[in-house]
Length: 73
Image (cartoon, rainbow, N blue to C red; front, top):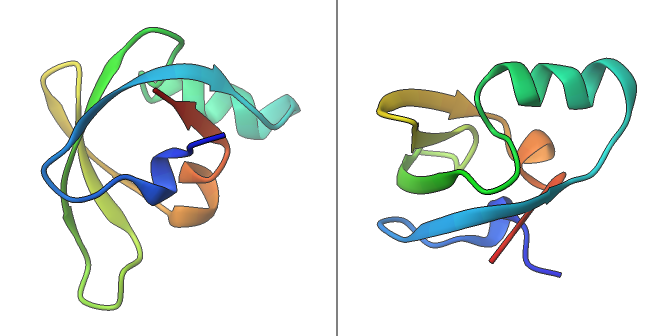
């Protein structure tokens, strides 16, 4: 299983499945990260956390702990 946390900078991937439950999963979905959406990893913070993504035409910062719950292809 490949997660968003492991995607290299500059790569574009498609969300396959969201793991987690309850409020955490709902928050991720509210940010636009839903099944089938394309996500581009733009850059990482100097210490590697958080990561900056482009999702549905906007910039999003996401912690690596949350990115680890997003399965990608």
